[in-house]
Length: 329
Image (cartoon, rainbow, N blue to C red; front, side, top):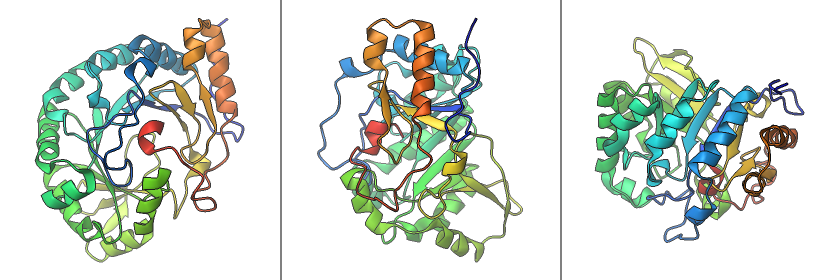
């Protein structure tokens, strides 16, 4: 008999969302994620193969995981991602397959990703000023904008813009980003900085509460309650008289741990049960040792049993030493 009862963690939360990293590498160096010049990435041989990824996702789907988001690093750095997308989209039970990207390589792959099974994407974009973008990421803004417009033309929808708001860095662009998303029909999500690794802790010095950002927006726009489909933690409002949804992701000022429905699988096959805790469970060596499908299901259940109640970013901001790119978005 197949074991397909839902994944419930020790605190009664139903785990139905997997964030799947396919590489820890990235072609940008965002100031809050990776240090400039960082090259200590894992080797491709250490990454799960597409066959291994598909097997793990199929097992998760059997246990009720319906949403899968492909992340990195930058997922489009890995070769042949549309091939993996098609394999995952064909799995029974996977109802929502999405992608997070910095969009630098999106223009060349948007149509193929849509055809393979990606319906919606999240794009990291912290500024609309080219020089500021280069200072934050080391990259070129025009590549990202071109990728966004190509994705829109290809019919990917919704397209969500993720903006990490940093005091004294880009907080003066909040209204400009709202207007940009209004113009192009994108959804906008603001995100608070998190103390992930040395770079994240440094960026946290520029922390600004999104409660303050929301209050500022309310002086310019009429905000009414809004909802968006998806499995993430954003709390949404809508700009009255428009279709623009604005989400607030507030891991510090208003943590959302009581509703956490997700786990993360790193490119190397390690399950991380919480973004802000060290609890993890390695699958790669077990997969390569030849475990059976029933044993894989048992390992997934055991891993979820280790999920902590909440992160402790506020209490212990120095405890997380791994970078965001190595965790999986």
